Image (cartoon, rainbow, N blue to C red; front, side, top):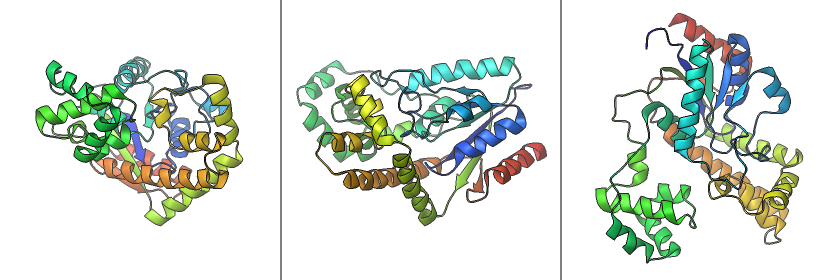
Amino acid sequence: MAGVIPLIALIGATASGKSAVALELAQRLGGELLSVDSMQVYRGMDIGTAKPSRSEQALVRHHMIDLVEPTETFTVSRFVQQADAIIADASTRAVRLIAAGGTPLYYKSLFHGLFDGPAADSALRRRLTELGNDALYARLSEVDPAAAVRIHRNDTKRLIRALEVYELTGQPISALQTDWASPSVRHEARWFGLYWDKDQLNRRINARVRQMMADGWLEEARALLQHSGQLSQTAAMATGYHELFEHIAGRISFDEAVEQIKIATRQLAKRQIKWFRRFEQVTWLDGSDSAPALAEQIVHCLASG
């Protein structure tokens, strides 16, 4: 990989301050930002996904945001394919890319490759199909709770694939997808992470949810329903929108929706942190420092090799 400008990969839980640090870095280094976020790809889902504002996007070039409508399915393989092309283009232009976001599976797949898994078993698939989605989801919750968190109970295709992998290998697909045994690295990068005290991070999450509501998240959710109707199975996994849709439908109060979003976001952060702990060669930095100070620390680390 001689001559290649390594990416800067910036990881951390939701609300840890990654976006502000990444923006500061891009400005200092004359770089561009590569969003590694499974939900910022959707148009119209701006406030709830903490998407960079128009003014922030005007400061530096952003990639992998606003790619598809929320009625479309967006897969990890599609992300890798498009991100690969962006990385190749940046390399030919000798531009530094800062990859920042909160979707660990996207990071893992981009830098270490996609999990292929065993070949499809037609007989097993027919048997699983006959069970119905409720039974499939219940079974997956038993054998692979981590996958059940990610896969919607109406996503028959992914439910069947997850159970098929378990039946054929005896291992949960979530464990296989996070297997870092392969020594191959698809893209050279310098890794940095932002860590927080748990209580501090939870307070930041609660405050950010309140700010998002003040910024018009509920109105954004209403507009999504009016414009798009039902979200795709992948877009529907975005934290917080389901709770707001439940409130709009009159099934829960506004206060209940906000409280449930806070809880779901804290649970998301916990899962992200667990994932990111598996990442190797990460220089961890105290997220409570200011964005300029953190950017300066990263620049110093880059300069010192």
